[in-house]
Length: 332
Ligand SMILES: NC(=O)c1ccc[n+]([C@@H]2O[C@H](COP(=O)([O-])OP(=O)(O)OC[C@H]3O[C@@H](n4cnc5c(N)ncnc54)[C@H](OP(=O)(O)O)[C@@H]3O)[C@@H](O)[C@H]2O)c1
Image (spheres, rainbow, N blue to C red):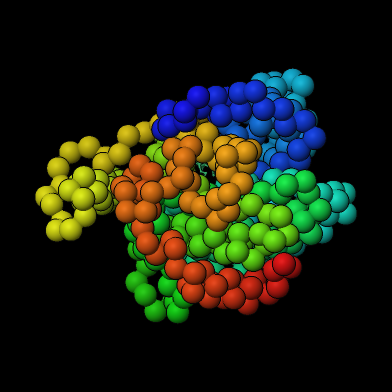
């Protein structure tokens, strides 16, 4: 079966037996993480559900146990906006688990008001990128002990809003803009996925970045009418530019969102595909969308991506900066 933007999680996993695979998912209490956990467990994987607190994850785990009565679920609390929480979780988890086969860095916060994590990083860069950077670094020994290990990191079409800013990552000198901060963090997610493939590929790790599509989830909790209008106007212009084949900015149409929403089962399909597909073994480090390889220069609102996601010098510099900020060397 050929996959596309309508393919669902269960269609991706049709015929796959994941028995014996240990899969860890952040942000598993809702949205794409919850659906990924459901589908992967229904096909036999043992799934560790992570959320910021026990209170947040337990009701979700209960709901998943109802949906997949034979599913093998365990839960963990880790606040990705707090380095001490990540380190404490990793210490405890590694004491009980020698190996992990797949880590899905799925949690995220989008276009929130200006704020800081417990360690003083801007909330979106700190949570979406640095939190997952440290979590992956700390779980790396278990990943290296895993069977054909994979790391899947959620990026977004939002990468098209901004490259990373390595000089002022926490908006100390730059005026804060919620969508720019989200864009920076989602570019960081994609550069991290690419650099991880380069650094840990010879340890057997496959690493992918994923744009899931546009899906109505709790991710939009911080959106005001103004932020929605700004996003839609940007997305319409992006679509019009892509349809005109790049070049001069054509006039963008005035109505609509500039992209189409997917149901959650299709939205979570690309990350589930990234976590399991045998077709991806020769594409380490790739940016994926619509259950396929991303296309350089195509519309980021569908399956395209911008050239700044391929900048290996910036990816390496971001890696070094991230190690310094989280105070941990990534074991490769
Ligand atoms: N939905 C879309 O259209 C879309 C498009 C492109 C990319 N994405 C990406 O897809 C991923 C999943 O998003 P979603 O749409 O499924 O949204 P969602 O339902 O809001 O899920 C995000 C999850 O991340 C968790 N999270 C946020 N901050 C956290 C923290 N500090 N520590 C631990 N967990 C934290 C949230 O937990 P709480 O509820 O407790 O805060 C929530 O369960 C995100 O990385 C997002 O950027 C989504």
